[in-house]
Length: 359
Image (cartoon, rainbow, N blue to C red; front, side, top):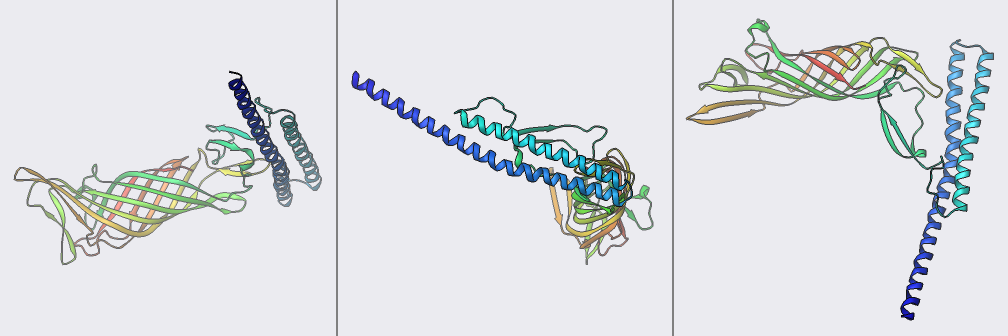
């Protein structure tokens, strides 16, 4: 029994020593990380000060403020960031002192290495970049905000009705159903401010996939003979006759509309949040695939046929425009290129729907 007790005591002591050593190593790692964070604090605050001084100089160059006002603003800015450095370094030094005196610090000292940021929704002074974010991780990994970001990017999604303008016919006489024919566009767009000190005009460009579908009525379908595509009546009763093209295009629009300039200490932005805007431009690209689907009954059996790669034009190009309020707008596009290379009557695709710009 005595031997067992001695063995148990030795095991407990070994585990205790290991735990103390591990905690000491952990504290050393934390202290080293805090010391490295001090360098980041100084460079971060100095960079913010530099951006602030640049902003003041720009206002001075634009004759928005006098030299005396600029000097006073720079002095105030320097004092502010000097205090920021002093306070932030003091917090880190206190954290290091606590870790050096104690094996473990379980309570929040106000200088923890992790941070949690939660920003949801926008307020009156929000800009188009304040979209709400959640960040969990070390403070020193958060990048400083760019002072003037002239180019931004966003997701573009559009959906609506599709049809075709046929030479010598009106839309009322179209062989395609208005309700069943539709289009979808999905892409990524970049928006660049044209002028340095004004956001009155922007260029919006990107890369998009377009799916244009035609729902053919009156029991008609596309047939191809000697590379000429025509609409003919199907010998059986069609339940469905649809034709779709898939395009990869580069859209380019000139965007106009009012915006709000939002100025902060370390950055400024032009916001079009809840603003009217109009875009005028066009697109050009490639036809990736053309596909026709037919559904019908034959001898009591349901049949489905698919025919790919009709004699469509390899290239597609057209004009487009949108009128938006905020992120939602009315969108129209018209293919200047005909649907098929050779066809009895020229047909040009036309679309009208809703456009969502997530900028």
